[in-house]
Image (cartoon, one colour):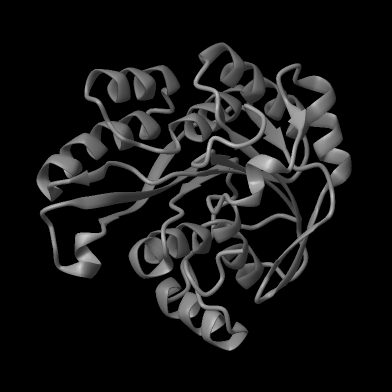
Length: 260
């Protein structure tokens, strides 16, 4: 849907661009979850690329994204089918999607929330670059109810426990503030992630008015990973849009993390 806008529409150019952003090979970790941004690749792609390069990609992933459009269900699970990118089709794991839908009372089968949403799609080429064959479950979150998010986190933990499945939360950080102010706010968010503390994450966002669009996916992922026995949150990279544009007067922050 957003090929040609957020990332290259030609397969060779897209593969080359991801390779350039990924850089030299690094030692990969076995992870429970990752957090990565979803802006256009020219701005946030280097952060996302280096997060994906740092972990082993299993055959199945669950991607949690924020709802930017307000369309569709409050917890929207895309139940089946395929999503296409210039690098090929990515298949939805319908069995796992159904398991999540049955376990979580608030989740709904819904495609409307996904139709104009980019926050999940932009992760697929990174996955395809590292893993030729995988399947996934896309879940868009649009309801800032902590009880619902905690329940979904618990359901996700139950659904993946003992299986080789990676949880992914899609988010950008502070939006359209001066770079120094954005960096200070984003440091609070990244500290909560490092400490695997979803409640601290929420309080920092609320107390400091942090415009982090994907806080719900991250909050949910942290709850799930803690239930799965996570030991560490590791920040991989932080940048902002000014690092690309040269304009630091109003930036968007991008952070990437691995949960082990």
